[in-house]
Length: 137
Image (tube, rainbow, N blue to C red; front, side):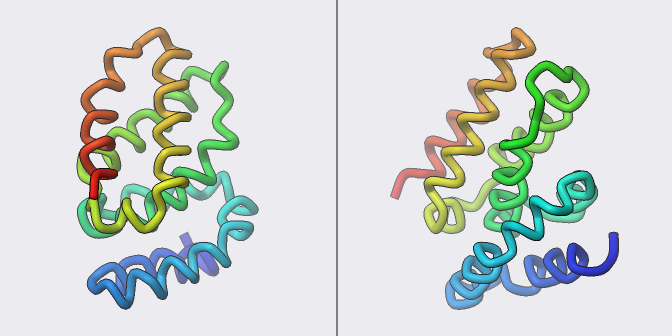
């Protein structure tokens, strides 16, 4: 990982510690969505570096970009997406989730569709319960 994606990861890591920094990070991530989409194949490399408990906001943006491109007919891609989402949903920070509820719900929707696509809807229940709790004010 190098270049603009490395800069985004570094910014996510450095800006996820205070409410003021999170608002700045939100502005940056919103402005960088097209860059994330442009570098779709490399997004899988970003997620393992991030910790869901502290970098939820960045992970939501990355997974939301990925969600639009995950082919539900490709079993391997679906399983990777499910694993990435499950990790984020089970460990997410509610304060960061509440900054981007619509993007978070979009990720949850694609997560549930992916679980249904591989005929494993029950595997989505616990992560979606955790997601519902994270969305509550």
